[in-house]
Image (tube, rainbow, N blue to C red; front, side, top):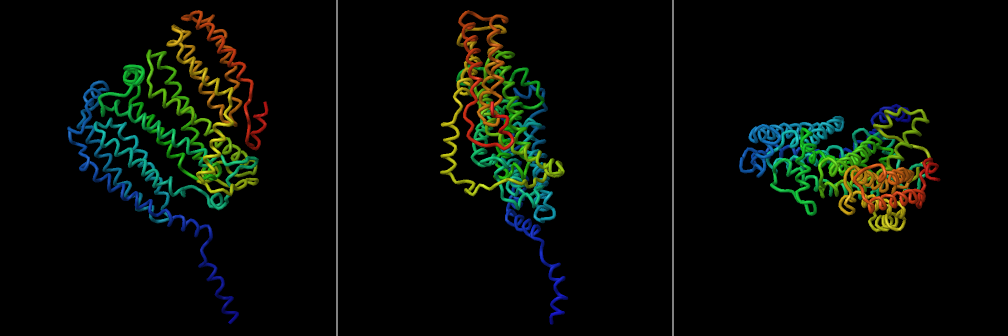
Length: 483
């Protein structure tokens, strides 16, 4: 009997599932509903042209003829047919990829659904969709397709080693830079920016006849129909709206461990927030210089982009530290970047991820009590400089210089709110030096403007000295925060 039992042991062991594979299988079962959601989205797209009347001329916006003439576009009817064909093809693809994703071994088909969703976001811009119904439908279904394919399942590409480990605080840190307290403000700011940019996009596509502008008359309409805007082959406000939507979606993906489980996502998130924030500031800078007016909604969205920066830097620093440790340990950077991994010295935060009361108190303490006062004053001075042509009647190159420097001072001051980015405040020292010299080198000023610029320059130099409070630990990055 013992011999028979020993003889059966290898066969029994072969039938025992691998723990990692079993965990992957259970994770696949728990998120299987998302693939049925993709099937439903595909069916919705197939029915959308008939339900929403893509080809009905009465659904075209009131300004479609104006946009068609200004942009030298194809007739609205032809563009509507293109939107219909795009939605039908996308619906079929979602059904195919969603069906394949029902099988665990075909989970890479989820990326096919994701890229189909990305195409749906861009289709209204590519075809200059003549009606609001098809545009809003594609934006909504595209966002849901991305969420159902990779955002909620979170499985494609992640290694079992990184998923099994529960540590979410980097070595030498005292909090997780990927916590929801860090990401929820970014998601909220990105969604507000999306809705504002979507309003501008609707005007550029001809879906609405006017755009809101509470302060600068026809400034917004002038800017988003200017030669700078028309230099883009698509509606530039639409590109901004899609970028903000990507920021919100990427902010929702992953848990408190994503600085090490999804380095690629953190990197993409950083690219969406930091460089695009720079692009937003660039467009704000050129508004009064090249176009002679301002756009209120553009100013608001640019400011919101800047306020996202302090919430982004620490997660990027943690991800880069993790990649550096992986390199020192001889691991493949390519493998770690795309699949994640573990790191020695990391710890686990035992608190629930979404304990609202704890998050609210911690957020208030972080945002209000420890707000760097010198940087706050510097940011306010930057806003003042942006509008000296209205408050001090400056003109010429001095007014342009004030607006340029003010925009950059505001940006770097807000960015330096992040403790890991506190050294950025030194750049304000250089801006202060320039303001001391600018009134004597540039034309368009007067005595009040000269005195004001020099006073602001002195204040910026002095305000660049205080470091402000450092309340957390950041591992090896602490050495950059001592001065």
